[in-house]
Every structure is written in C-alpha cells, then in structure tokens.
Amino acid sequence: MAKKGYSSPGLFGEINHYDERGRKIGESRPGLFGEMNHYDASGKKVGYSDVGIFGSINHHDARGNNTGHSDVGFFGVNHYDEKGNKKGYSDQGFFGWNHHDNK
Image (cartoon, rainbow, N blue to C red; front, side, top):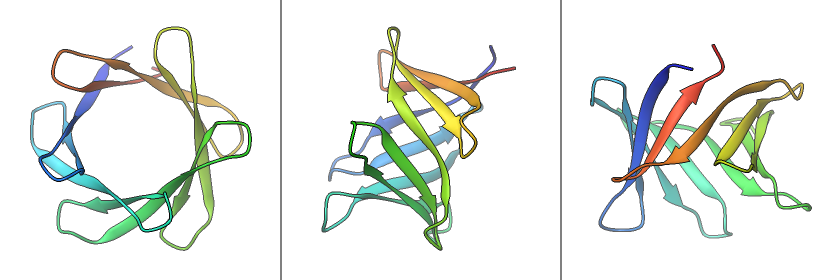
C-alpha cells in the first residue's frame, strides 16, 4: 500500500496533516463537545469526527453527512468509507501517524 501522507501533533492540541511530499494540507482541532474539527490548508472547515457508541470514530463532512468511520485494528487504525469499504489504514510512526491507502 502506498503511503499517502502523515499527521503530527502541534503545540496547542491541534494535529497537523501533510501530504506525501511534506506539504501541509490541513489540521484538526479539538471542539467544545469532544469532537475533532477538520480544516483544509486555507482554514476552511471541511468536517468533523466524533466517537461512536461502540468506540468507532465517525467522520462527517461540513454539512454533517456521514463520510465513513475508523476502528482500531491489530496494527493501527483501519479507515472505511460510508458504505463500510476499507479505504486504508494509519500506523504509528516515529514523528506521528503515517497514512496508507488501500491500493
């Protein structure tokens, strides 16, 4: 599976996201109610994630539509689309999380 980028923690609780070339493509910041709000590189909110009933992380677009979920797996975190198809996974790297697609 190809590595598609990585994420690393920032100084103030945010998580910075980078593409495979190291360019910042966005960030995620904690919200007031336990959710994580996601922003693109220009600062526009593109969605949010929250914890589901059974421990999954549910992902939503900026309008609140379900876009998928993530579950902890044996080797990291598995990511699924809104239909339940596995899209990739993330694993812990030395400086943060490495993201891989399912291709």
